[in-house]
Length: 116
Length: 118
Image 1: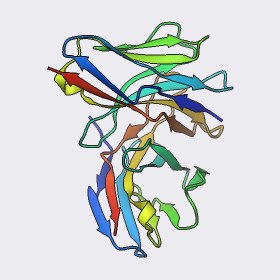
Image 2: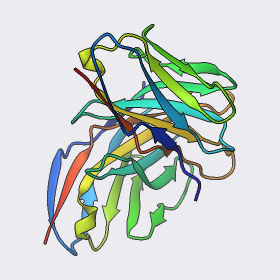
Image 3: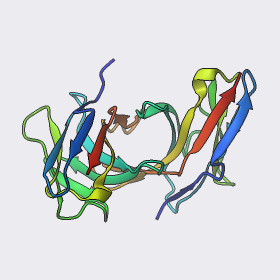
């Protein structure tokens, strides 16, 4: 069964450093998402991406964040200058809109980001 | 804005018993969808079940069923014959359409930690 993959599984970085989290969505999916889950809290929407541009972003997704689909398979989330409060699990998800059939957002296994 | 409420932060259930996890929602949309995800201690998000707002029958997937009461705006997850492997965090989520191109986002509840006791 196709799945969303994410690398790395765990990233440790120092405050102020740039990090890039990588995702490979399911190949025929058109819509891509990043979500964040701070330890012990609920999952929060960060950004959605369709047709090579951001279609929606939350208030969390400030100028320190950016997303990119550099080629036909990867989808990346960049944090330019990490802060302690960026420590969280970051989930990538992808979906294929089906107006008739039930669909779901397929989540990747997550990248745990630890900022020290 | 959409809102998902899960009022049970934690539940303990004896193995083989059925368990109901509560979820209420608030939306002004006529068309919406409700999801349940399972998050084990390893952290990944596992899709369990989906209910569309226009679906007349409650969704079922194996041991999982969704008790959808539209007038009460509730979408409770029922797990029958619970197993030790069901111990996990469970999140209810609602999809919100962002654009006319089908782009959507999920709004999650705060989750319920379910512990199955042998």
